[in-house]
Image (cartoon, rainbow, N blue to C red; front, side, top):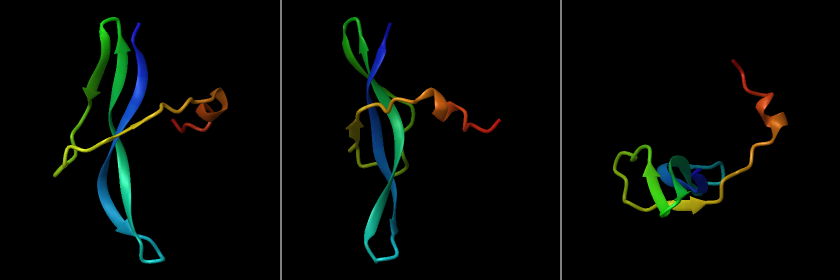
Amino acid sequence: MSKVVKIVKASVSTYTDKDGKVKHRYRKIGDVIDTSTGWMLVLDTTPFNWNGRAFLNDPEERKPEDLDDIQF
């Protein structure tokens, strides 16, 4: 069974906060998964005008109580 090792996130846009600092918005674009033959990169999407750079973040564990907040 494959396991998600890292979450791939990329900057998709910028904005200016109330203090005048430029900040970035990030979106998940894929996963790095551990397979029986090694790690594999799986991209779900590529942002418009993407420069090819992305962050590899540890997956966040979702607690069962977090799932109660999902609106259906």
